[in-house]
Image (cartoon, rainbow, N blue to C red; front, top):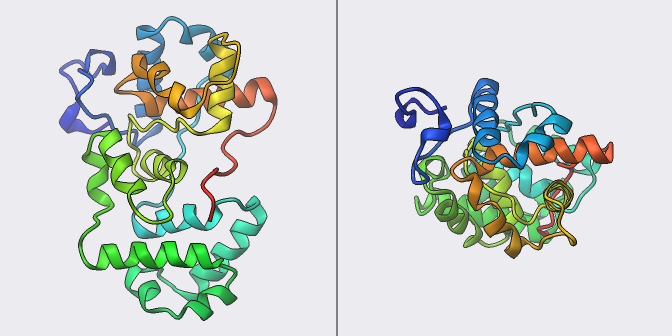
Length: 237
């Protein structure tokens, strides 16, 4: 976890909600999971079934967000093929290169018109220094989420996955993720699967470790459903 926000005894459960945790290593995640189970006893049986989740991290910056955008509403195989062509054509993948690229060339690589518009918009915002993706790691999760979703083509799922997987934001909460919603429904004994709006108050007891809670719920989903939960986003492109 970020040494700048660690309490004296390195115990996340002693942090005030306003403080920020970074999940940069597996040890960070494990420490956070144990703190969550301690502060919310309802998570103990969930953890017993789920086991310790593995930390998921992706490349940060423009390339990391571009990869998430490219994968929206596509199968894993299709997304991987398009991403391979894109990164081969632009090596390294830099926002200026993509900003200057012709839409026709990007389309031939397999990108839809909507994805091209989103990626070019992101590249322009970064080039104009109106957007700094790196600073989002040190902002309040809800503020960072709003910053990203204010951008064209960046929906809630994409924003949350970027914050959680690319930046290791310890309090990012993917409220719209169907697998997390289903896991929360079963794990907390709810009658119906909660909506994204209903997921917000449900996660309040887990601040400032909602990102770690998301890892736990994905692991729980995989354990009870026998299939992977982190498979794609709902944001349409």
